[in-house]
Amino acid sequence: MNGFIETTQVIQQNLSGSLGYLPLSSRSPSEDDLRIGALPAYTESKKSSTAVWLSGMSLAVALAALALSVQPFAHKSLSAYPIFQAFNISSSYSDSSIPRPVTSSQTVVGPRSFGPHYTGCSSSQLLSAIRKIRVDEEGLSKMVPNNRSFEIEDFDYSFDWPDACPRPHVFTSAEACDLLGAFGGLNLNGDSLTRHLTNAIFLILTNKPGGAVWEMGDTCQGDHLFDDGKECRHRIVDNSHHEKVSEPVCGGDVRVFSNDLACPVDPGGYIPRFLDWGSTISPLKKPLSTIVLNSWGLHCHFSPWIPLLGAIKPLFAFAQTSYPRPISLWMSIHAPGSNKPVEYLATQGANNVQEYNKYMDSAIDTMQGGATLRQGGVGFLDWYGMTSGATSFDGTHYMWQINMEKAQLLMNVLDVMWAEAVEDGGLWNLKSLCPPGQYSYQCHPFYFFTKKLGSSLL
Image (cartoon, one colour):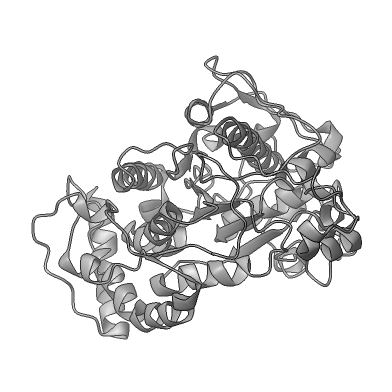
């Protein structure tokens, strides 16, 4: 604990010299700041002015968040400061142009041809089971990089799975495309750890050894795809509709976007950026809930206030009155490898990572008042146990096996979320009214999209 405080004090000294901010008073905190109360909704007409206001306040809030990160673990309870309440960026937005089915659920999903594949546990139970995963001492995640087969169909889990839930399903490319096609899109935000997960998702969706790499060559595949080398990194596309993608991912019916961001120090810009991305989603998918994954820590010096104020709190508040409601997941920082460089052990060692993950888990739970993922809360995907003891090539990043396990586990969580949304009355299905590719006056806005894409997802 003292290591965190000493480290962040050094960070404060460095930042205060370069940014010129003044630390806020550290009075006795409470937990109310992270809870979202009654929120004023705003409509499309207010979207632009609100975005401008948010952007104008972002610098002040960012500096406040950085100042408060000086001693992120110094208090037993969660900090509450008047400035957080004064700059409450957590407004919500509802797009009045989206058709709204009669449903008791704010989570809305589309029909699927396959699945659900994972049954036997709820989304909350599955997330709890993932926390309890442990590395198999003889599993593939313990192996050093080698030239073994990296064919997608050869993948299998290498960890010890707890008995509380059935073992997770292994999704084929067709099944994963079918699953993600039933949501509005997948939006990932984070640093290199999230970038590697994105690449594994592309591996599954495309069923190609290069994943998101647009020019694979002889090196950008298998374990080398994840060694964080400059050669492969600069060949990776950040979205499924990138101009350099050789052929449409999942036939063009799935939209995946990865925002490679070291640390979310612009709180006022998070929701406007999310809305900008949402504006690129086709009318076919706008009635469906999007999936949002966030994860930061290493480049934020493990200061929890930065991601909490910079992303999690704005997104959670936005989701409460948004329709359809996005599905929000926070991903923990995975375990450091045993070969973590000595110079980083004091600030990025196992104790630091575990303390940060524990704090973030508690803060998120406090913010949402114990709400579950199914109830619109932020789900907590804990990667620590499944990586503790696995082989890392540099002490920070993991290779093909671990990243594929993460991507497959994510698919299982979304599979369960889809089934729960359907059970809650959130299935949006226009197939009978609007046959794909056929003109009908009721579905005129969608006709040209279905005809062009040949989509069967209405």
